[in-house]
Image (cartoon, rainbow, N blue to C red; front, top):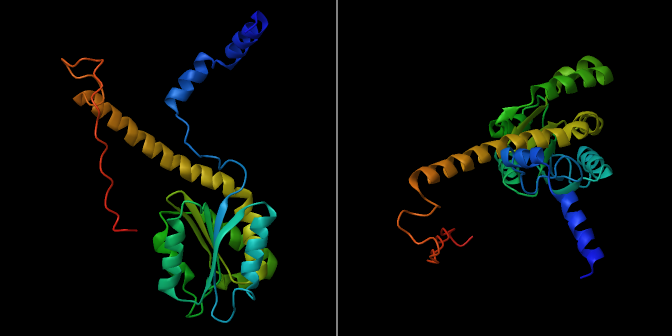
Length: 243
């Protein structure tokens, strides 16, 4: 290696070395792996609910899918079902369990007809309600259709870092809710919800570390040779029942 190359490497290394404040911040707030929700594409789960329409003929579903794709979000799963309380709840619950679903949007069965049960099916799944979404949607819908909005019900909330929005089955109403409220705020909502989870996990990890230090786990035991290379058997994987 020439003296010039060595000098360039030293200079590059010096510029890449973090400042003391940066090192302290990194130690106090460790980054969350894979947390790229502040920008870019999100994975969406879409569920449309209607007994008198099919997947292909559901205008609200098409408006939701088109709106998501228009801003480069991915529809990773989409389902269309009849208005059945247990099926709606089961499908939304399964989407919440998926790692590739960042947001869930439903359309349909949210009014006051006897078969409109989406709100009742989804509400028990929500850990935190987004009450402002319902108020904002009602205000916007009133400007569009007047007092007819009194029959329109919506709900939104967050569960395990995943926002869930239940929109009406009317195509125009679903498009308005998605484009005017959901899409402008979705990155911020996902980031806030996952920051909450990340902080909880970090607190648990920090507590475990402190407990390990207190009991001497993970460090050198008294009287042990620090150069010892005793192998530790990895914990056996739990039996998942063949799944």
